[in-house]
Amino acid sequence: MTISSSLVSAPTTTVTPVNTSGNSSVAEIEKQIQSLQQQIQKEAQSKDDAKTKEKTTQTLQMEIQELQIELQQAQAKAAKKTSEGKSSTGKTANDATGSQNAPGSSPSLQMLSNRILDVSA
Image (cartoon, rainbow, N blue to C red; front, side):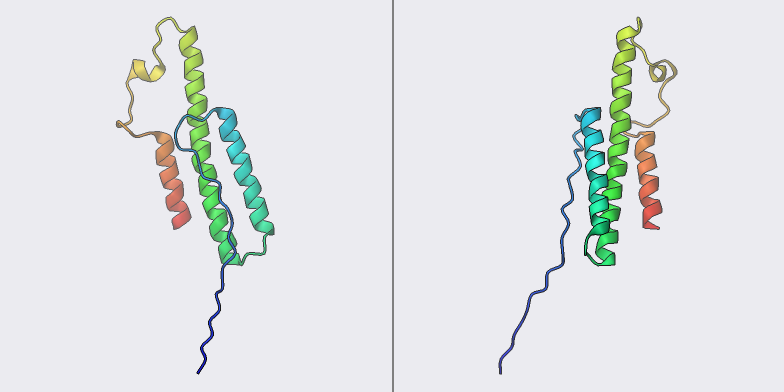
């Protein structure tokens, strides 16, 4: 008796890793977002099956959302540096009024959490 086996491999799509170090410049983050958007377009045109396309596209969209939050944080940090350079007191509005957020918590992270829950539902 002869038994033969064949290996079937699913097509793969390369996903660019997200830089989460927090040290990215605004321009670098924008380039990463643009690259991920191009990957989504390529995935839409790929010959992958529908489930693979959907999963890959969702992963890329989540990475874009994370990068958009990182971009907002980088822009806020840059704006803060600019305003501190012009300010005589060096205090920001949050310093003067007291931050309402718990330590380690940020509104943008809460928004990301809500978006992830929406995608999962």
